[in-house]
Every structure is written in structure tokens, then in C-alpha cells.
Image (cartoon, rainbow, N blue to C red):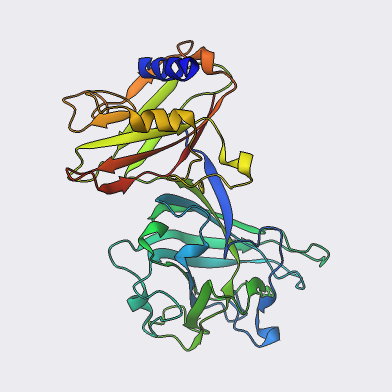
Length: 356
């Protein structure tokens, strides 16, 4: 216990750094697994990038298929060909990709495409050309991610609200000469994705094709947290540098106190993916329970009062290199929770991993 108390005292002594990014496929679990549904006309399934060059498709992904069911910021989308397709390559001059929370969770979606997009968070994340590189071998299973699209505008999404994610892709204009088709990887049947769209009109507002349990396999890149939901920043340069930036932001209205919970036992110790521990995404240990048993205090970095008159969490804690070198080599997993005057939970941050 003496070591634990020294640890907390050391942390209490204590610009934001780059957030850790993650990738996963939608639906979940297809990173190294090939889909069984080729999205292309040769199999009778409408294709996204076709020889006409104009179509619109909405793919709706169940909120429960996300690895981290917490607020996140999605920054990139990747697509891959079906493993049994070869590609001559070519450039589609204008492709518009929109993301939104769903108005109707699948498989209940509307034939009116706009009705499926929540107007409160609809964002055009990409608008420009897409070049499909040539690919002549069919040996790779699954195929590589041939198209990677960093977003022009980031998309903030929160699966914990139990709203599905809609990815709308509009291919406008005409197809490049001699491009053939881009046969995309997909899955069918699958309970975590549905598709709806128009096969030959990129400006269509009403769909002419729908399938409630099939759709595109894609890969997203994201970081935990976003600008509008409660977030915890607890970051260090690592490698024994001993610096720290520590802040809880976007506290919900009505917050009067809260905890920053820390565990020195990574969830991976128990073969549990990061962010899926039993206590707000972490695996609790003696440090966690010490924090939970401590009284709230003004400026206390672990059991805090809000508002705090300029102390933490109103202001961040920041210390320079060399201050906390005693933690070199340790891994912390952390999460924050906000409570109202009745001590009911009104906000939870995404978990964070800190490698000293």
C-alpha cells in the first residue's frame, strides 16, 4: 500500500500530445478474414464503382459492431477489392462520402435516403477524386486495402448512444475509360450491416435496391474521444521522459464531482481487448480501489469536485520532462466518470492507455 500511496502522490505533483489511433473493420472481425459477398455486377450484386460511373449507396453498421463503444473521432476510411477480382485501374473524378448517425437502425431503413441520416451530425468527410490502382493477381486473401481515404472533415461518433453508423458514398460523373469495375469485398448474410442505394444515379434521393443483412467490408481509423463528449487526456511522451498532460474536458451539465480511475493492470493481462475491462473499460486493481475509497477534494486529480475554482478539473495538470521518471516502464489504463448531486453517473470518458 505504501507503494500505491507514493504512486498517487507522484501523479498529484503533476500542449496535449497526439492521440493514439486504432483501426477496425466494419463489420468487426474482418481484418484478416475475407468477406463472402462480392459487390459487383458479375455476381448479380450492384457495384459501387461501376462502368456507368454514377451510383449512391448507404451502408448502415450496427453500433454493437464497434470494438470501442465510446465517443470517438473517425479520420479515415479504407476499401478493398473482392479477393477474386482483378482491376485495370482508373480514376473516378468525383466521389462524395458522408457519415452520420442513423435515424433508423438497420435493418429498418427508409427508401428516402435523406431520412436515414441524422441531420444533427451529418458530415461530408470526403469529396474528390478516387484513383483505383491496377491489380492483376488474385492470390491475396483477403485482398489488401487498395484505397485509403484520409478525411477532409473528421466525423465524431458515439456508439454508446446505440445509434448505428451510416456511410453514404455517392459516385458522380462518368467512369474512366477502360476502368472496368471495382469489385468490392462484402459480407452476406450478416446481422451487423445493411445496404440501400441507387444503382445508376449518384444524385438519387430514393433507393432502387436494398438488402438488410449484407454490405461493404471497410476499415475505419479513429481515435478515442471527441470535441463534444466527456473526454480524458492523460498522456506522456513515454520512454521514461517523465512528463505529463492531464485534463478532463466537456464535463456534463450538472457535474458536482467525479473520479479519474487508474489501473496498473492492463486488460490484456486477462486476454481482454483494451477498452473492454469490467470497470469503465479498465481492469480495476488496488490503485483503482484506493481512488474509489478516497474522499473528494478540491483540486484532487483522482476524486475531484466540480466546479473547482480554477483547480483541477477546471484547469489541466501539466508537468515537464524529468518530473515523474519514477514511473518509467509502467502502463496505466485510465477512465473518468462524472457524477451529479445524487451521485448518479452522468458522464463516462473513453478509456486511455498511458505507457511511461
